[in-house]
Length: 125
Image 1 (spheres, rainbow, N blue to C red):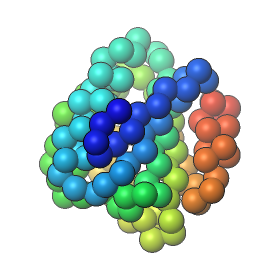
Image 2 (image 1 turned 90 degrees about the vertical axis):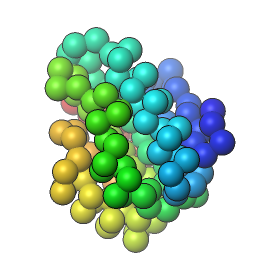
Image 3 (image 1 turned 90 degrees about the horizontal axis):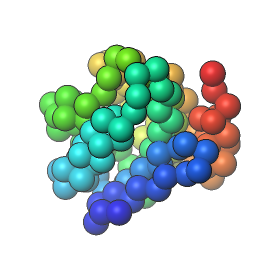
């Protein structure tokens, strides 16, 4: 667990990141966590990720897009990614993901829908 982002691994296989800030430091903490998660995966795996943005709002998109290669995303694994956020952040995240995010199956959830997001991640094929 970091100062700007909390990481929780669920027995169901979900990697949960709770963003506590929207600054350069959160990106500095987050990218090595993502890289470690990606390096631990085996070819053919499905990686389920939950990003909880309820406390932070939208991440710094320009910095994230410049440094996204540091996350170590892979073409030989599948990604299911759920985001929990308010409406304004959700609209920004949808546009950011459509503009150049990595290939993944994504779904956006409202504040208070954490359990629904986890259930979607573990049951998505």
